[in-house]
Image 1 (tube, rainbow, N blue to C red):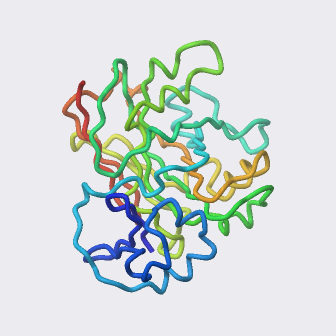
Image 2: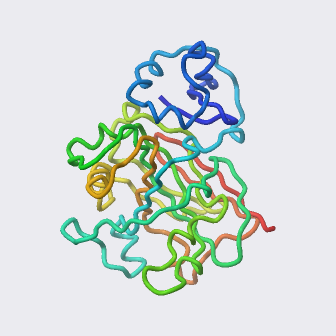
Length: 284
């Protein structure tokens, strides 16, 4: 299934349109996209059997498929090549405090087709696989962790580097990554049964048609089950929570010379089997 947010209503995306979940269920299931994941265990079987009118839609009308998560986790330096380009030590499984974890504030989330107003500074891209939690998880072993994931989606961890790097350690990661529109998400949450190999998906992004990042999610130091296990060892993960799982090599800040986003640019982010984000940039 491909669960999306079409103009504020929960829908299932199908090849020739969208099925409105509330209407197709005869009102038994609510229209709120966020409520789908609050009751994921109960609703998943009903959604799988749902049929209804296939309504054409415009991609620009899709919003963030999980609009208001209670917790949003973001993972740093989770690809070895990204650690190397940033001249940082790659974390290891045995290292205390791994993985590097911060947050993006949920107010930054936006849809898969969006226009972002650039703040002053140096705005960079970071395409990421995002895991959506479907069941409350606390102290979950890695071998059981996929059972707590409702699905996967595409995210962009847009970052204003001056704010991020300001202050003394720990630096202002969360603020630098949470300007309005700095969390493009979507186009849908894709359930795990849709993937041939959910641990090995091509991931990448382009700026104005030029490839900037190109990798596989199999290159993550901590994969999705390990992240669920390690995060839930500290605190409960809640239905609808998001985990931005880290970005591969190819960010703008580490290029020579550095490259940052400017007004008029188009950023296209994609993950195999999930879909594409299209973000354009403007000025106030």
